[in-house]
Length: 603
Image (cartoon, rainbow, N blue to C red; front, side, top):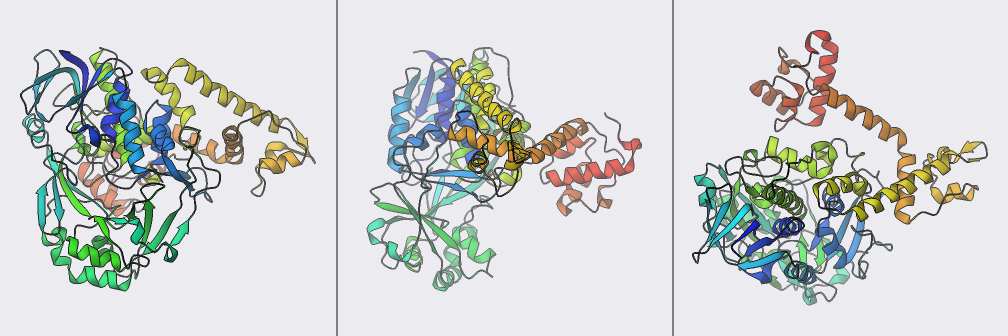
């Protein structure tokens, strides 16, 4: 056909979600170099974890794809932080790596509204009418009203194995050689980032008897509410570094391109290489490593926590210094990859370029790390691109809505000087935006955006009507002089304990029973968080003029420095400054309250 409403460049996790979302509105083109690589999991074969599972649950509630793919190919599921409160409990799903990509390809290639185009993007040209032409290296000029660039780590990508490098976006795949140029020509500031991946080891050469086995949860969970058929079929394992591992690293740092100065890119602070761990945390005599299978019939295992850019001959010795890996055979060596990213401060909240209207960027090109962060951005960019192409009113997801809102807010208003990773600690009101209530929060938004149909919205609304009915039943019945909800608020009591006292509940699903229990047990904390959120909303316009930030002892050192330099006029402006955290804003509000009315006026 002669043109599309949306053309997506790249078939990784961001590109998949962008194409999937945009295809709900009209016909979409997906431009990829090699269809066999679509949906590939180049790093750990897993989805979820702290801060990340919340993104996937929200994606699922918005009509996204990742949760479905993860559940269908799950081989090991665990709820992390299960002994802690619901605000930080996080589902992690280990996937069969090859099956995940195969299932993604089945869904995308079989979609009636997605046209698969094979080629490499060489340029982006305005068509002079508010749309774009994607020019390929073979000379095609592909017309689209909107474009989503989801190039991952491929823009001028270079992989490093020790001091040796080659032009690659990831192992064995050519880079995107030309996409950086049109972005820079439009005025985008491009930064150089770096990430890495661990070695893959032949499973039949690992002595699993020496490893600590971590079983799957006996009652597996899923992002869709329906765990996959093999969700508890495989364990994972744990090993650790040794004194020999640390000796080898310290004696060979000169062979690391990071420590020799060959790599210019900034790496992720929260997912450092094994060299970084040994150097930065020299007081630790060991570091835990997680051994993850790539499938039920495991041919390879993934050494989570062992990313490295050291040369292959050293990797052999390093891996064999680990308990259980004395006879290890590496099938794919670890490497670092260096690549171009755009400055996310130059994007709108819908990830549209402020310099190239109609061009959206999503995923690692925006300076993030992780499958889940990429997928969330893909859905947002794909939806906004499709709505723009159809002339629909622009709609935004705000920070207060949940983890996706926080991700967008921080990228666009604070930016990042290193690959950005979502964590629960970044979300100030995490008790209100838990993974268990993602559907209640996000499905109405998905319906308003055109991503979720009325049947699904009605299903979710009926679910929470039943939850409210369960709470009302607890509040309306007494046992031994106390109401059912009062009994349930006791730390040692659960719903079965309350029912054993004679309190009856209407018929509820396991998820609905969990929702009842969380809402009753944490009712006081939830109300307090809601009051705080409303108070913060009211305080956003408070003036900071005349405030001596250096004199507020409760502020962090970083906040005092950055506030003093930026001199924000309002609390809202202060909250947008990188390095100013929620605790610092709370300290500012306390200071304003102590100062009284002379600084409490709104601007």
